[in-house]
Length: 190
Image 1 (cartoon, rainbow, N blue to C red):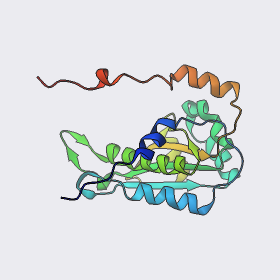
Image 2: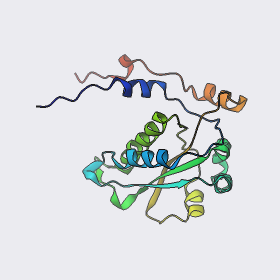
Image 3: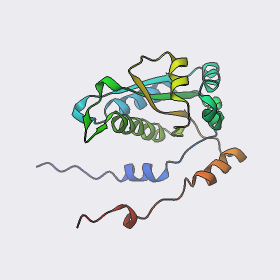
């Protein structure tokens, strides 16, 4: 059996990634966006149903307008208006597999979207996974099919060197740098 070579660079990439809330206005090259889409496309999914669907917005005015349609809870993420790219990760719920009394589209889209985020980071492009939005209001604004569910969204862009006070406060509030020790996440089955 052929062994897979270890990829130390992947672990380093994961260790260095952080949530970015302050972006340079520089647009993302199409090749970078294409790599992000390819990484998302290649994700595993339950029974290979591939329920992920992505809305990708790269026009600054459209991003600024969308911010107004994320609902009251979405106002906490007003910083997305400055990102040169915004991706809304959706699921085609009809493609979902239901196992163990749960719909797997959430898991499938999360895996796919995370692969997109890591591919972006490999190009030096930051992101910030967001769940604070009014799904109904945003789906209506985007004119999504009724069978779509919005799972998450993220701005994408090159990080600014200097973080705003708002960004620093959110980082402290969310405890972004705190991680559980491995002893806290590995559970003995006996």
